[in-house]
Image 1 (cartoon, helix red, strand yellow):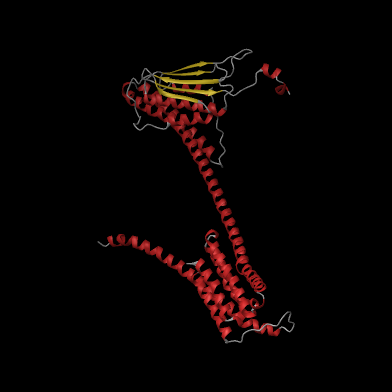
Image 2: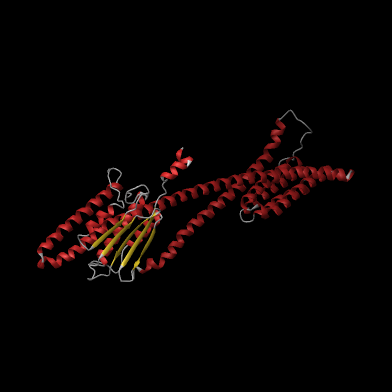
Length: 461
């Protein structure tokens, strides 16, 4: 019963592992909000306390002298409380940025109406508004923020106009002049408190988005490169698998077939059995040499000279296959226009010739493995000028197959992959007589004839 308790508590443990991370993030956010609000309050109150002494120490006054409210006076106290209220409202800027922005912009209006004698320090109330605008722009999209920004701008204008009108009373003498002056002062203050911080914040956000987009683009490029590398590795692995299959299957299928024959002949016909053992040894040596060459090609530090199989090599391939089965070869060479037979496989690329060789090799191995004792014919038709055809056909099996598996192998798939790689046409399937047919058609590369070379000015040049 003891092991069951940890299994039952595992989901709770996993949930408990995620909960501390969320609590840590929430604590960090709250700490940041407190620091922003506290910093705003400290700076604002520091300006309230520091501006009067700094202004008094300056003997060169430009413009009218400033009349700051005395410390702890009613106007000074109301202004300080208003700044503290604005800073405290910033604590909720993460949860309700639009509401906080409107509240922070509305508090100076009350200060202007109640404590108009704090006019020389009233501009400090813009500082919390600037901070609220920045926080709101960072946490809300502009499409959802424009109404709160407009309301904050109107409140800043109203606060400046109310202070100007209450203190100087311009509306009493000339209403139009007082309205223009007060609204003008408020608009300038709103531009500095809302417009400029918003513009700076949007620029910073746009640069951040550009940086994020560039990082995402670089990540996408890296992933694309990784995908290309994986695809290249997959293609190389498929090519290696085809080559290993073609090398091993041809020889090992012959070894398996000859071993079964030797097992039956070792008591009845010792001479034939000895001959079969020698053939098994030759096949084993051949597969070891082919595998050694392939390993040499795959190793960078081991130079390997590997002969490339061609269509002409099919003749030797069929000769070796005759030791273990009845295989007949028919070669139909092509004739040149001038005179004589052209070389077998002329005009067919080296990769296509290798595909033809491997296809015949695999077809002979399949015939020996799945249709032992059946006659097999290999035909190389090189008469056409535009293509070369290779055909391997075998009859039905005369004795039960030895060593074949019900699951089959990858021989036919390897044939198709090689044919697709060189753009050849492959036909594989049973015949009407119960046998099997493999037909491969390779396109011949275009070569200029002598007549064309003599008449074509581009070729002549």
